[in-house]
Length: 167
Image (cartoon, rainbow, N blue to C red):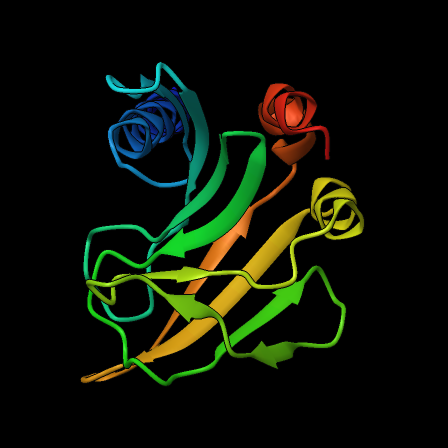
């Protein structure tokens, strides 16, 4: 009887631990999508963005890297906001699923916290939409950082943007 009681207690405790683990993960900023819309007060032009947060970053900083898809004035942009300063001349090395990695020079934002993908095509967006993961690495003054994204929902989450920008 005692063995049975210990087993029931162990199962109950393990169940509580799994429940708590889900609650803790739900409160973290990782792997989540957000959507934004803004209107230019001067021109009334609408800008829409879909943003995917990465998982935890290799540098230990709690702020995730953000993958941005933006449609403004009929033009689509794809960029990564690193949320930390990157080296101005660093390459961005990326990998989709198990494809070969591709180191390329991306354009940097003025404040050096974002990198803009220079080769945006519908074929690239189609490949990303069909993928499961996207990994990006670049350099900062304190070393390299690597971010991994869960891209399984890219097609669904960017469909409206792609239609707006006709890409």
